[in-house]
Image 1: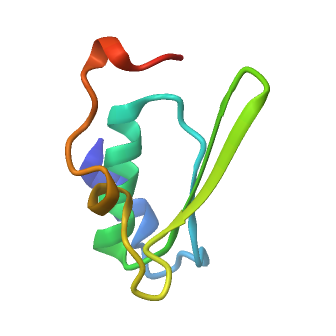
Image 2 (image 1 turned 45 degrees about the vertical axis):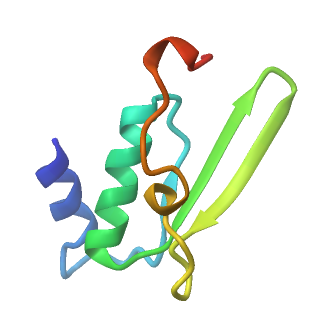
Image 3 (image 1 turned 90 degrees about the vertical axis):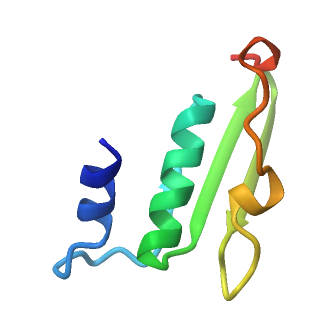
Length: 81
């Protein structure tokens, strides 16, 4: 799936300027981050838990990526869905 994701995002006919991630899965967040780095596109990531939410932008104009800020995924048992 990783190679297919990168191919879709990096397609020469693609008109996207950013990548948006609203996944609820840590592994997917890392995968989408890596694809955004490979394609050189900023990543807009949103998440919500109950009544709170967060919106972050990674890799914009040389800014840090998701993996830069969180180099190691958290233990599976510590992640709340």
